[in-house]
Amino acid sequence: MTLKILIVEDEALIAQELEAVLTAAGFAIAGVAPSVAKALALIAERQFDTAILDASLRGHSAEPVAQTLRHSGTPFLVLSGYSHAHLTGALLDVPHLTKPIRPEALVRAIRALTES
Amino acid sequence: VTPEGRVTGHIGTITDITQRKLSEQSSAELAHRLQLVTDSVPALISYVDAEGRYQFNNLAYVNWFGHAREDIQGKHMREVLGEEAFAALEVHVRTALSGQPVEFEARIRYRDARARHIRAQYVPDVRADRTVAGFYALITDVTQHKEAEQRTRELLREVNHRAKNMLAVVHAVARQTAASESPETFTERFSARLAGLAASQELLVQNDWRGANLDRLIRSQLAHLDALVDRRIFLEGQPIRVSPAAAQAIGMVVHELSTNAAKYGSLSNWTGEVKIAWSLKGVGNDARVAMEWAEYNGPPVAQPKREGFGHSAIVRIVEHELDGGVELDYLPEGIKWRMSAPAGAVLDRGSLPPIGSQSA
Image 1 (tube, rainbow over the protein chains, first blue to last red):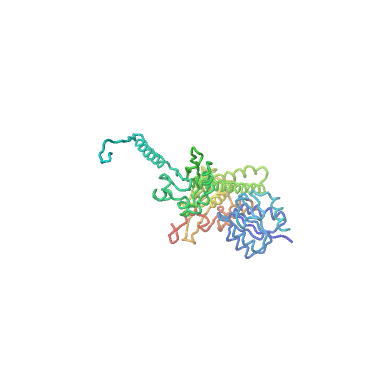
Image 2 (image 1 turned 90 degrees about the horizontal axis):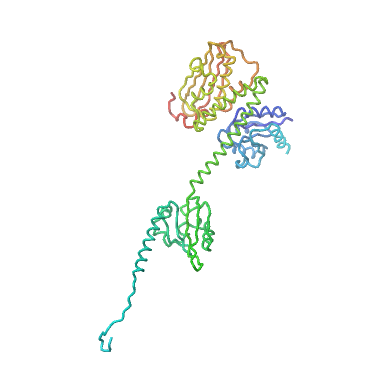
C-alpha cells in the first residue's frame, strides 16, 4: 500500500522539492500546507499516514501543528534550519532533519517512522 | 584643701588633645571624601558588618533600591534585599565573612520583584588579629549587557536559520534547473537565478530585513535589462512595501518573467514592451495586492510544451507563499501574468492599510 504523506513547509521551492523526492521514492502526497492554519485544515480533512513538518512557518512556530499530530497519534518528522537545541515543546522528541535535506536521508527517515 | 576648707594649691593634669582633635577632624574629612568618591562611582558599593548589617552604602546603592541612605544604614541585608535575594546571596556572604574574597555573577530577584543580573565582588575586612569585621561589596548591574548578549545569540540563531533555509532554496533551484535545462545551459541559468535571489537579499539587508519597496525590488530584478527599463519596460504603481518573504517570492517571479521575455517574449525583438503595474485595493482584511506583467508587440507567443522551473516559479510561488491566485495567459500580443493576493500576506506588517482607511 502506498503511504500518504502530508507536507507542511512554507517555502514553495522546498515543498516542491520534497514532493519530487517523495514521489520518486514511491510515496503519495496527501497535501501541501504553507501555514499553520492550512496545515490544521488539511489534517482535519485529509487521510495520511505521516507528515513532514517545517519547524517555522511564515515566522510562526509549527508547534500547534505538532501538537495536533501528536494527539491523533500520527508519526511525523521535523524539518528545520534550526539546530535541535533550539526546538521546543511538541517539536521535540521526534526525528529531526536539518535543512538542506539530503534526499536519501529524508526517505530513510520516513521509512523508519512508518515501520516503527 | 586644708581641714578648714582653705585651698592652698591645686594639682592638675594637662593633656594635649591637639592630635586627637586633629585626627577626629581628619577622619571626618576622610569619611566625607570616601563618601564623595564612592558616590560618584556608577557601581554599587557597600560595607556590611560581621552581623550582615549595612554600615556604609554609596549613592548608586541607595538609588538602586530607591531608599533613603538612613533607611538602609544598620539594616540587615535580608531586610533590604528581600528573602529570596538574600537566600541566593547567603553562601557568598558566609564565604566573605569567613575571610575569603568572593567574585560571582548571578541573576537575582530582589524584594520589589525586579530580577537583575549582577556581577559582584565581596572583599573581607580582615583585621590584624585575623578576625573578620565585615566585607566590602562591589556590585555592577550587568542586566543590559546580558540582555544584549541574549539578543546577539538570538540574532545569530536567526541568521543561521536563514542561511540554512537559503541553502535549501538554492538546492531546490539547482535540482529543478537541472531537471529542465541541458547540461550546456545549466550553469548560465543557475547562475542567473542565484543572481536574482542575491539581488532580493541585498535589498532586504539594506533595509535591515524590514521588507522592500516593490518598485525598487522589481528594478533590482531587471538589472540585466537595465538599458530597457523606462524605455521598453514600464513600471507603474503606488509606493508599497512588501514583507521579506514576499520580496523573495515576487523577486523570483519577476526574474523568471524577465529572463523569459528577453529570450522568447517581447524583449527578444526590437519593438516589444513590458508593462508592470501593481495596486493595493480594498480595506482591512479584504485588502488585496494586485500585480500584472503584460507583454506587447513581441514575436508570436506559443504555450510552452512543458512546465519547467520558470512556470512553477511564476505560478506556484505566488499560490503557496502569498496565498494568492495567478492567471497566466499566452495571448497573441504577448504573455500576460496577473496575480492577486491578500495584502496581509504580501505587505510588510508596518505598511498594512489601517482598518477603515480608503485605499489610494
